[in-house]
Length: 187
Image 1: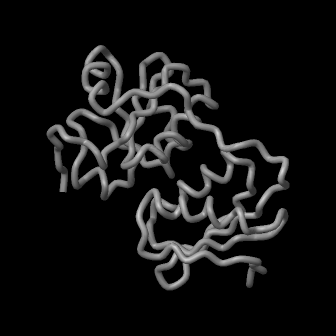
Image 2 (image 1 turned 180 degrees about the horizontal axis):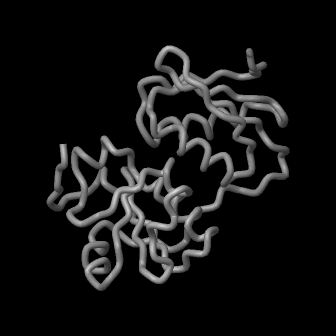
């Protein structure tokens, strides 16, 4: 089955957050009701683009894979959709270790491979794309410090947790791309 696409966007070879950044920009040139096809090779783009679309009110139609390229389909909502939300509760990379040592957990929502090649000692890995199905693994009464590579996925994950009734959620900024302390590897 072929999907009628109005605009195509090539994000092949780009890693998070670039597929989202380019998609946001491309959406400015897409008319209301039109469908944007985002071509990406970053596996994390599946969860990222779905969560971003939902957070701004666009319809995430789905993803299919063709010859190693992920084809994401997003229908632009009307111009009256709400502005992109940002999660308000944030802390810095420097604060997270001290805060987590008081009983909180650091939740790393990057993909498994990203986590394996370097993560914060004691952090918990639940990739963004698995978060909704693994909420029962988290304690709603515990502080949860959500981290990713740049703060984009963790922002979306923090919003998702808050929507699901988690009240002690904090987004860690700027994320692992600026982490200067020790890392643990599990390769």
